[in-house]
Length: 438
Image (cartoon, rainbow, N blue to C red; front, side, top):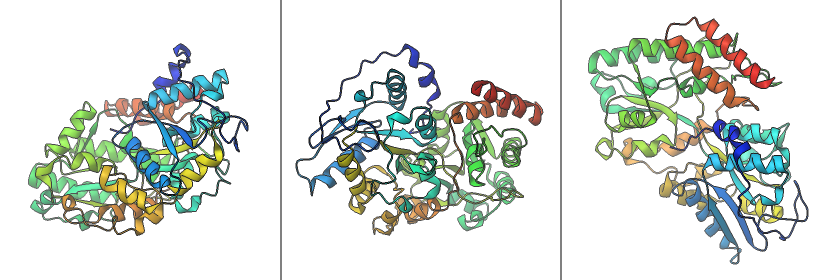
């Protein structure tokens, strides 16, 4: 699971001590965004903080190999740490103003990027003038790490959402994947009831009290929990109310099964208890662990909210971006990212089959690797399709208090599902966020 929460880590910062392995300084010092005299590592070595050795760290190791083809003396010092630890260290370093403790490059969750870049701008180096072409990334994904028009992150892990469906179950009820393509949530629910009646399979599963599904619906309409000025918009938010209504109807009708944990959610997929899932494309790794279901899955776009301005069939859940610190050897770090994650089809051709890492860098989609059929998905070239989806994901405003708002909405959903009036529950959620912001 690559989606982690940051809030607890932030709250724990006060008790965290700066027991950091100091990164040496003294590199070339061509730092654009912060200190001009120090760097994360120095020489031809860059220090990197990242989590997940089989995914993010593996991808960074492959990027190192790509860059070494033209720079044989180049090295990475990759330090594995959880996202929670990275978040805590960022906060502690910023509060202590000990920026020489930062690495050259660090990985940041997309949903937490604006919170950190706004609260702690001295941690980050701006990348807008780095030579990286940010028009080659989906605007909706690049927006996570863009503050006031300035880019601070190179999008990496694609959180592009997909509607992955069991074609064998659909067939039992007389449907195909095409019947679920470019449909509304109203159509989706109608077909879901029919499939449940005919096969006994609910369409979806998910953790009770989680707002993941509703957040994906919300972003698919380009909507957010905040306005452009960062004010909470939980109350009188038509897209949010429509999303909650869709979710509530699916649970009530039995086509969405609520479970108690992430493990139960994954088990519902690999054990064949549901007919589909809607989530970030990274869920494909878990799906493909069910080898007995090979050939029985296909991917299409998401249902769209009816009656909501700006509603689309595209959204995202999760994802992360690489940031260059204010303490970095900026020239080396920016050239490395420009030449690899923002410029190398060879890299993405390697990490797609190696780790299921789907590019956010759109030119990677032109590679023959992305057009290869995937047997597990019935021979569908799903990764090429996902890149097409990614280019159409609307951006939304996550802001500084995204996690506080998301948690408050999750609590509201639990109350609404328990019978509380929606307007009352959403007002309570907005009050909670406004109190946190005060």
